[in-house]
Length: 236
Image 1 (cartoon, rainbow, N blue to C red):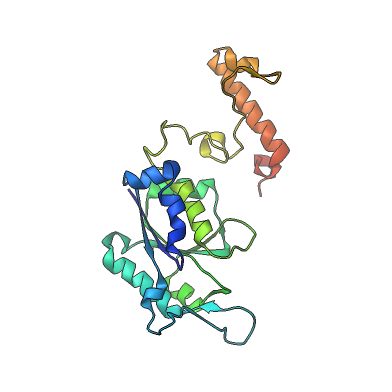
Image 2: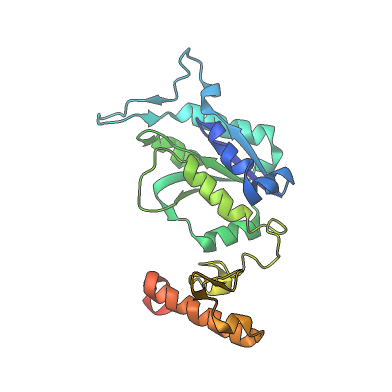
């Protein structure tokens, strides 16, 4: 079982992850567990303030230290499995989350506390004291960390044993170790011919070695066309 917690101002956003599709079934089957904690519950003023103006001036608001710190403490106190959890801040300056990192987390199954930032950012003192890693989904800025956290959890959970119907369904996904980090090959299903377009004959041959060779060739060709940066010779 993989344990997640999310510190978020919008816990209801996670319903789309926990109640839908194959990942939703993983939560239903207790292959994954998610606890959502709203930092507003750790405020003492009538407005439940969690942000304030930045010192030194400038635009935007900054999430305050204390509500976030109290949220981390509360998770660790209420759920013992999170005592040694990894605290991850969703941040544009973080490590780029990719399939290799998803595979690593699925294999380790270390509990993760996602801190879903909002506004201009998070008080640096909270980052210095509590955050173990910062992860990013790409070179863009989102309104908050919730969508990024859900994306990462989806990528991790589908790799957990028994989540996908077929044991090797994820082995040959794009970017996976089974594809040596390359893109997946094209796929076809019934009918055999539609709108004058036919399935490649090799896939109908029953020759498994020829089919696998074709798939590897197609994987390489698609990667070369669409993501040449993934090719071994182009990696830094």
